[in-house]
Amino acid sequence: MTATADLAIRMARAAFNRALAEGDLNAIGPLLTMNVVMMTGTDSAIIAGRKAQLLAWKREFAAKERMIYSRTPDRIIASPVEPIAMEHGHWTGMVRGTTVASGAYSAKWRHVGGDWLIEAELYLTMA
Image: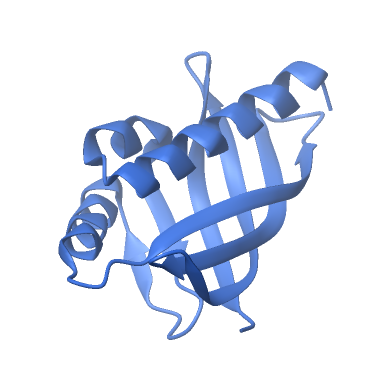
């Protein structure tokens, strides 16, 4: 894996985390492919497509007791033959500064037009 891909994905993940903390839908959209898929950690709901994911985040941001999610990459592996990479890490969900949920995740990234975009995410709730 090139150091450039690793750094670019980590920076994109940090931007996504900032957007979640700030409730910034406009910053989330450009980090997702059009056909992005997310499988949630607890009920295994599948959210397919950028528009559906942005609607889900909009609902999440409007919640009275809003949970703020953060993902921390532990390892990023880039394919040597395709413009894709896999991120493995751990996530937390906090309400008013207290962790109320956490677990592990994997994310598939795709290099598109010079940017690394999230193509798929799979979450596992462990606490």
